[in-house]
Image (cartoon, helix red, strand yellow):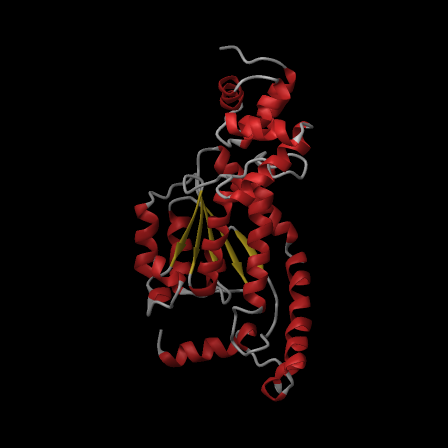
Length: 312
């Protein structure tokens, strides 16, 4: 694509238009600058609300994929890619879900998390190589993130994913975008022009982050890694998280602080096992058997524990 064509396309994108509300931004007092940003940010939740049915469809597609042995892969560049990587990183400590289930591919690799990598978002071949290296197949779901919906790296990834039969989705802020051609599910967050023209790390980025958080949380709920509203699958990798695990065990199993502490110590801070131990009044090894019998789906393991013994 020539430089002139690029310029013309950018000038037509809603996310690149000049926002009349903030045209005098640089001349305003600090508090007024913040008020302008805050007022524009209020529009983000409504943009996300309009797409809830499509987000629900993506949640169900990811859950179906994971239950069938597939994977859930985000692909993005720049701000979008960094937001995806953050969502994946947070799932490990929050729900004990690692790269065997979910992964983020960021244009430019790990170095792009802290600084821009020149030409990375335009490298269509690299996107395909990354997916081939992961042996992408028809069981997988690939979710592209691109505010403009035209980032070559993301478009190429979705095109390749579609060609191997994987389920595809795009989370974007522009309707009728090139990425949409290769997406089974199109989530379009119409956040409008940015406060700072073209700075899509603002409203567009906030909207994408909001969707990613609700998407991954809903997936974990549907997979049984939340019981009621308790985060029962967390990995206690810090003092704070160990204390949080004790509080969850106390609320879930109705034990006191001392008992919760002892159970978690006995279980090596495996919260799921500790819950089963408390509910079924069994030792660690038998609790693990409940989890294995439930295929490591926590809610099912709890139901088994409450219902009776698992034969050896």
